[in-house]
Structures are given as C-alpha cells and as structure tokens.
Length: 112
Length: 115
Image (cartoon, rainbow over all chains, first blue to last red; front, side):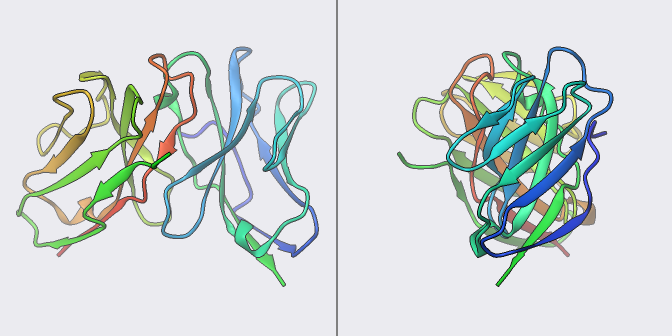
C-alpha cells in the first residue's frame, strides 16, 4: 500500500499557484519524498524529490515540514497544461527506485 | 534524446488469448521497469530488470505473465492466457543508474482491453 495520503482532487485558476499537499506520517529517516505527474493518456513524468530541505527546480518547488510528516508541491504559475494527476511517493534513494509505490494521487484541474 | 518507446499503443483481445508488448528504453539506461496501471489507480510495479537480470518480480503473476530482456536493451512482456482483469495500461520505464538512483522515465504505455 502507498505510504502517502493525498486529496483526490483540487482545482486551481490559471496563472495562480497550485499547492498540492501530501501526508506521509510514517516516513523513515532515510526515505525521500518524490513527486511525479501523469497527464491524460501519457506515462508518469518525474517532477522533483527531496529528503529534508526544500527543493526547487524549473518545474516546481517542494516544501517538506521539519518533522517530515508532510510536504507540499508548489507549481508557482499553473497553466492549463499542468492539468494532470499528481503522485506523492515515499521511497529509498540510492537503492532501487522500483520501490516507488504509487497511490491514487491528486487530480489537479487548472481552469481558465 | 529519444524517450522510452512502446508498441503497440492499443490492443484488444479476447480472454484466454495471448498478447505481447514491446519496450525500447532510453539508450544507455541500465534499469528497465514494467508497470500495470488499472483504470483509476496508480501504476503498480510488475518487474524490474538491471541490464538483462531480474531485480524484482515479486508482484508479477508468474502463472500467466512473463518478461524478458535478453540483450539488456529492449524488453517484451507477455500475457498467456489473458483474463478480463488484465485490462489495463502497461507502462515501461527506464532509468540510467545501476542502483536505481536516477529518475525513472516512462513510455506512453500500451492500453490493453480483454473482452
């Protein structure tokens, strides 16, 4: 079973920031938080990952709480093309990423 | 850089028939994964290869599913005989690192419908 909890769906207005929450209260000290997204009829796409510190790349920012029990993926200026299912995954890094266990994710709808 | 290629994109078969899916990973990627994604759910790992060896096949229904990656490059996944519950999207992914440290890159998937 997935070790994360996400809301099933969220809406966001185009151009606004999309903040997607994820709870992972049973995360181990050596486990990372990964985010992937899946646009309709495509395979999942890697977005970002982190361990303790906040991370930022060209796609998004990842904010991890100090106790590491939850995190938030931030898309700073959502566009219609960001409409997708977003998966928050907890897993080991440096070991097999085949241990990625996908839950049902959050379906983000970006509206004009 | 070319992405992960999969074929066919769609397949419709009757139950008890056999079917095969093909995957060509990104050039140079040592690790290859096959996932099954049932409608409304996240992908579930079926099997993971590192070069031409199996790393993890614990969730592969071995009575009907088989997979191979003979030359450590492309791979085939076979179902024989198919059941109605095998209707799903079959995703192939690859990663560069031997230890799976690298990001997984997914192909577009093969959508299977078993009637």
